[in-house]
Image 1 (cartoon, rainbow, N blue to C red):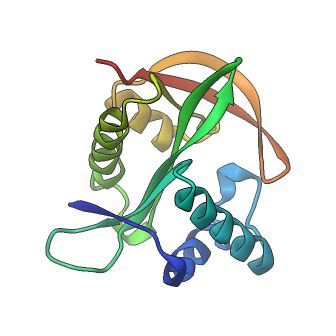
Image 2 (cartoon, rainbow, N blue to C red):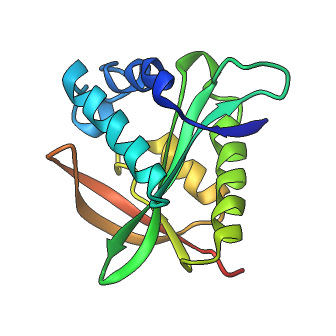
Image 3 (cartoon, helix red, strand yellow):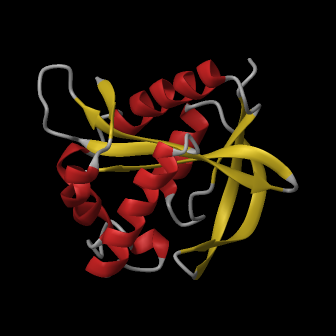
Length: 164
């Protein structure tokens, strides 16, 4: 498996996830096409400024994306940290892809060495993503209210130290 940066022509992949009601069930529902285009461009802009690292998840032997994963700078409890999130296409779910991609993404974040912690904020109801956090070595800090796309969500706050 490999991670390659997303590009402008990967808008279709963002749409495949964020317009799908089933994929967005833990995020308060799908986004509109207009919202998706805006968020895709915002991610590209953040990448250009070095504030986000967004990737397609690709098998070693193909250029067909199995999903996407990324991490970006955010502030959490007064400290600058990375936040990580991922999507895996339905036909590839249940194969350990998000966990393997998460390990690669954490390694990339550690290599940058400018921030000391990474957090993930899966919805409490998202059992699969919470299990991925455990498999990646994140420690559960507790539950919290979180905002995603202007929608309130009840999430778990998972944290991993990037120094070790």
